[in-house]
Image (cartoon, rainbow, N blue to C red; front, side):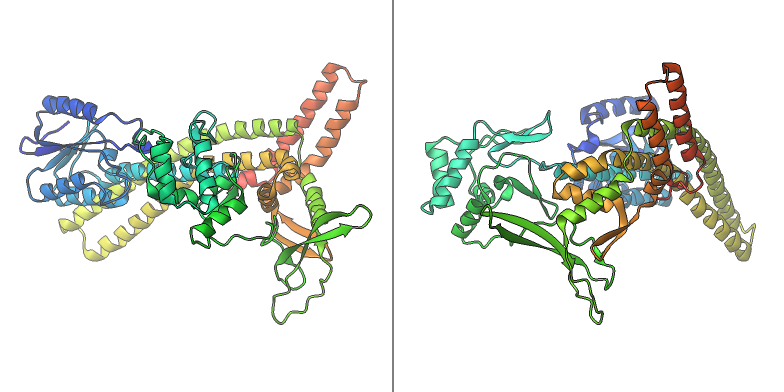
Length: 546
């Protein structure tokens, strides 16, 4: 590694307490190893700067910001750090560092692996800092996806409120054996109307000895009045919870009823958030009337059965007839039972046996292995071409600075090279995403085909709505008949599967066949199933454009 004896460095070490930095060396380790590196390279360190802040947002690290200002003022000319991602994980800070390098205010960024100098190709620095930024983006997406999935399964994707605990092994929420009954007693006192939150806090603190649960960052102290008000306004205690603007039915044990919760809101002088007193309906907002184009809505009606004296509840879906200037003759509603029976029939067309799911995944994962090999070779070639093209652009720029070419020739060649770089960059991104699309589509299709019908029949409102939405698009009703355009990724199953399933079932029931013959016939079915996916030109697995 080259080094300039005239350069003075700031040693910058950073570690965030957030999940992005869990595997990163501690600040002390970074400092010790970087000091050893400085001795080896003969680097002069102006000052050691440390910071325990996340770098995913700009403007949140005062030490880092001050360091750049001091470099601008000439106090030092280089930065010694563990990795580029210690300096930045966002495009704003990365851009600032890149610009300071290009302008020469920052003469070197030194890491154990390499140097970043003003004369270097900017593409390398931008790629590496872009990778650090992409890590944060991917981390946020994956975290978001995980939390949405957890909420959909009925578990609050955050810290459990007072009276409950997060079960870290099972990833559920359980009652706090030490505080659950005491928190329930607080609700009981509030429900009498004779206690204010202040009096309840005083009783809990002084008479019961109530203390908040200890956490890594604090806790174990007296109950704050603000926490008590927050508790009395949290719908979580009713068995539901709110997350990301939606209300979910939770799987945790309710502490109070919804009626008790509403009564406490009145006692506190709040009207509370308006919650529908009617029932939720699974398919509203998805289905349109095929005649007039208005949305279908649902109504719940109760009827008295005279023979038994029992009151039965029925749900009907009907056209809202809200499109102006359109006459709609769809007057007969469709019952929920009829609607779901028709959905079940359509789901049956795309339902496959477990064996066929296993075979399909084996076939497609085998093809995916080949796809990965091909994609790796393509990626390497694309990356090499991109680097060479960037070098051509750099060479062209130097030629113009030296007046070796005129403006007209420079502008024409520069624009051509920039267009080529943009195209190559786009191709690189597309190549990187192909494997993810392949695997996502594989899992999406065959898991849906295997599990959807069973989950539809046994799931709740949210699950039924989710499966119905995944079944297709352009949902409409005419004369009490449901029409759906199946999603393209389900069409191949509808075409290829029925005949193969019939042959499979026939072989299963045929007791006259010996084991060798039966296995040979099964092998032929697997081959036919695989040939279809590998050769069908209309199959979405080969387009990978879903």
